[in-house]
Length: 99
Image (cartoon, rainbow, N blue to C red; front, side, top):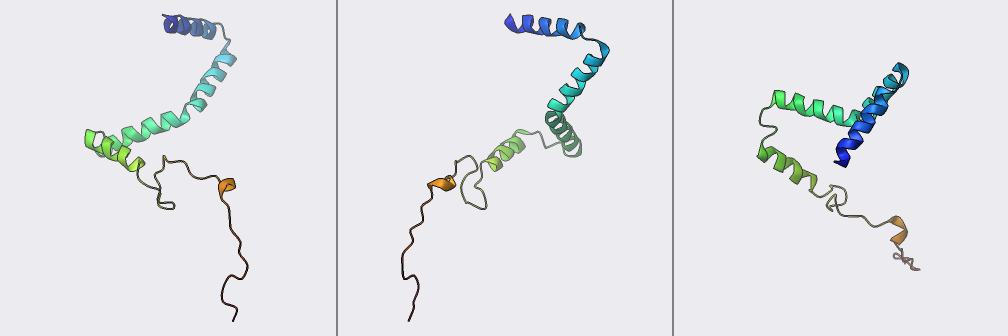
């Protein structure tokens, strides 16, 4: 019930805003959620062009591609990498053939 009360309080606070603050509220809401809006538009567009896009097999394929190893490091993308400060280099004298 706390969620419903929170929504009611937010709606009451929105109703108390003047027109300039309401316009600012909507601008900020659009900017804060722009990435989600673009993602939804891209999914709708892709589904309109290819109806198999939202099938179970396609979604499983997309998830499995996200778990593939990185081409540069040959490690999975979800695996943490070694920070540069943890790398030690051993320097030895007389590297190479001097004669």
